[in-house]
View 1 (spheres, rainbow, N blue to C red):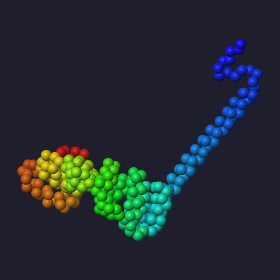
View 2 (view 1 turned 120 degrees about the vertical axis):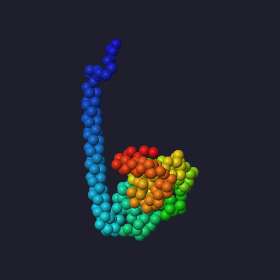
View 3 (view 1 turned 30 degrees about the vertical axis):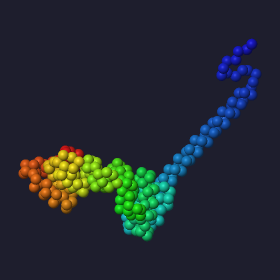
View 4 (view 1 turned 90 degrees about the vertical axis):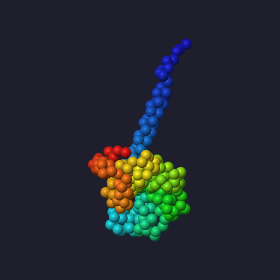
Length: 266
């Protein structure tokens, strides 16, 4: 009896080697064809991406030059092809009636497409539309949902609006601690209204222990950012403070500004 070693062909069967050789050539050709197809696909994608970028730049330049009709014409095919930036810009144009007839419903449509693709500014604008009932029935819960996505992406006005909704109990149960948290995030980007509202909450002990020094600091920062309401708020807070406390609050405001809001304490 002959014992055949696994993996090695026996002699006397030349056709088996020929078959493997032919199969090997076919496999190599198949691999080459697949690699070529992948290369062409990547090249085509790159070329398409460059063309879309060039068209976007053209649309943006037209918009900035005030040629809204051309901008809308250039943004539309890009938006229909799925470009989120173009969808957002087309939404802005419909909301404001630039180059197209003003149409809140159309603005909502394009904002939604961009927002679902993760465009943070579109998420914020969609939240504003639901908040105000523009193009859709007013819906605070839906506004909250879109504000939250934009806020978590770092959009300061969305952070402020989210804080405002927690402050007022719109779309969510009233929660001053949550309002403070979102106001703080917006305030640390220099958002004057958020700074003002932080000052108010600290001065009244809502969401945090009452703290006139921190309240004065935020009201002072808001006033320095041209928030007129904060000047009056700062004066009211100061009336409850000693000169030494006011001096400490002013020093903290200066430190906060000097650190670009990285060292504000409180």
